[in-house]
Image (tube, rainbow, N blue to C red; front, side):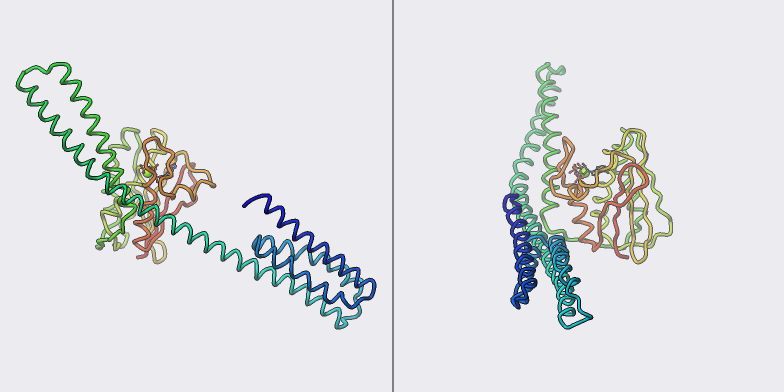
Length: 346
Ligand SMILES: Nc1ncnc2c1ncn2[C@@H]1O[C@H](COP(=O)(O)OP(=O)(O)OP(=O)(O)O)[C@@H](O)[C@H]1O
Ligand SMILES: [Mg+2]
């Protein structure tokens, strides 16, 4: 919010309270009956503060008005006369109206914020989808032609029996082109996964088995950092109705993040368990963790702190879990790292 404009709003509210208090006291002390009119003017700053600043602002204003109004109520107290009761009711009204306006305003702001987020996510999804779709064809062509050139070079190589240095050099460079193209193809696949609707092919699956298979996929990456992946899931977990491939995609994303965040030699734990009418899976690492104020941000599309990351791993994982009617969240962890919890209904 513009700070200059905020200051103007705060000053306006304070000025309205001060001027109303002045005229209210002046008319009461001089015995004028206009004081009935002036005390009603307190509703102006109250309503304005509620609209401008929400619940907190409205409450602070109603407290200020109560403090300004209280001395007159006490000084002119006359054994529960009608005037006394009117003043007490008025004070209760100030505070009740402040709470109602404040809550309504805060709720409206929250809804507006959600709407803007949903709109911008949908727009981003459409843009990403169009860009990724256009990138797919040239990438396939680059990968295909590079492979063709490599195989032709191999033939020249076999024909001469001995590869000239320049051919070996070209082969090495082309291998880099292939590797980078694969990386780009992967990114495009992730972008399309994020942007497109997600049809699920559900079946009854043994979660322990799915966890084992996901751990096997990331095993090579884990062992290069001497990280142990420990599956602590019990044997007695009931079967879950899930899309097995999509679910593995989520677990692989979470496990890869855990491995990348962990120092060498550490352990990543994955635990599936039944929790009331739900099934839960915790993926816990002893890595660098994430500061509290950054926790909401890591689910934003394209948020990454990694040199080669796309920042789509967690948004896609969240999208898949949402499609299963479940939720993906960060839970408190006794270790130093981070713990992600997937919860899906049984
Ligand atoms: N287990 C974790 N410990 C610490 N930070 C994490 C962890 N998991 C995710 N993060 C943070 O959240 C960010 C976003 O994660 P996300 O998986 O969405 O993208 P990425 O891993 O950066 O890239 P990508 O998964 O697309 O290759 C990461 O860059 C990292 O900063
Ligand atoms: Mg990731």
